Length: 378
Image (cartoon, rainbow, N blue to C red; front, side, top):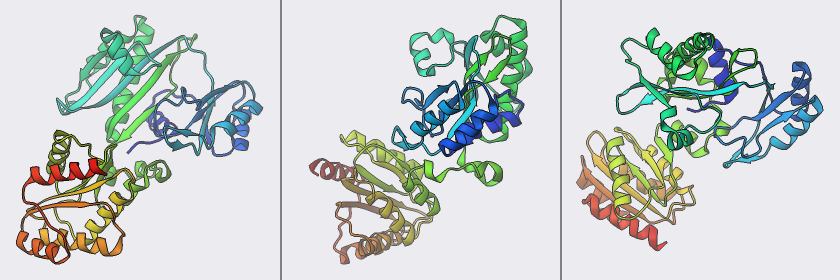
């Protein structure tokens, strides 16, 4: 779950990380009022779940409350990478002596948290990695012991030569790991971490992603979810207890089990197609879940063929077959559906589908190849 910058800064503040003050505005009038309260120059920043806000015109410097109002009026309602801006953060402008990048994320290879830091902040870390890879230091953290003091110091020492700045950075690195661990983050990023001319360190931007699987034990963090900022299809999937991720292809996939779903997507690409989604109906599906899954897939205009790949273990093939038939009764589906059902109650499922006028495959290769062909023909 992604959260907005102002929410990420709240988590950072709770961990003790120095963050400039700021308030959120939903109207130009509110932005002007906040700017007047803060005094001096302010920055008006679009709050959307994507990067590249500055390049898109979503971050503006204002010399006066009236200018802050004008900037907010221009930013509110604009679209950044397909997301509409519904609120802005108004925060004081700060003088910057230097910028650094500090982040902790989950490293899939080692299955442990990993810090990435660079003295070259304020730009995309991907750009730094490509152009000056030696400017990045990585440090894996053993989850049994957490971030050790000497590890935090080594990261700070890589960023700064001044002992006073090293001391501040050591504290911030430690606090960032605390925020990361306490809130079940998959990413906690400060870009940039700045040093002012007075030698003070501040996190003037923040990006945080939360592991959704941990939200059941984090009620306060769960309240940060912004339903308006996420695709409606993902909201519908979550409410139906489906695992769904929208992708850019044209073959809609409905599969049971994450492993089989990934294998199915790989096979779609192997046969020259592109999956339109990851959708796992789970290990104990029922017809209503299948109906919900088909409704979500068919609402995606890029889907040109629908692929069912079900290996029945706990999942009963006849439940899935009944869900497919029921969905075609409730929903006007013009997109071709290609089905593979094998496993528990396979014979009953094939009979249900046959009676409804559907045919099904038993070979995974055959069903995927057919779906890719139909999508290409459409």
